[in-house]
Image (cartoon, rainbow, N blue to C red; front, side, top):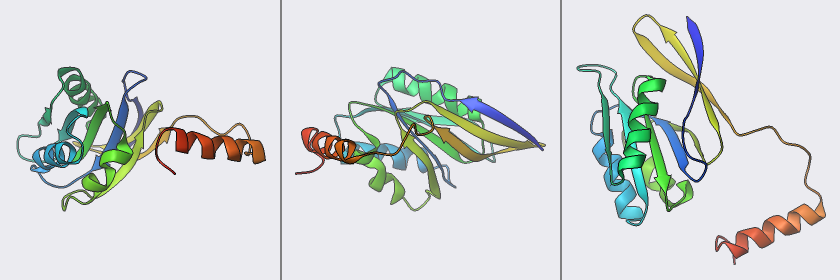
Length: 160
């Protein structure tokens, strides 16, 4: 078995959701879940088929995001994995709808940070072992940091 590190290529202002599913209808269901949750989000989806034609299936409503989704899904190449790129919205806006889809097995990450994907390869198959999401902590928050966090969440409308 070989292990490879695949860097997710994306602009800094774009969020990514990486997950695993089990059925070809994932692409259409992800599309519907995202637009029904937040029609203003611009997005692209890439899904790696694990059997049959074994294509990278894709959908979305933004050509740039679709292009990132297709290329990154291809580079990761892990069976039944999917990747969603989001602009004008955040994973928190759509994550519960995505996780509620019957064919979604799990989510590896949902972030705007740089992401590296650890991929294991054996023969014809590839699978995601895990992800490296962002950078390691530089310290432990103090009372000033706690207050700053609370103010920030209220400023952006996630807490009242």
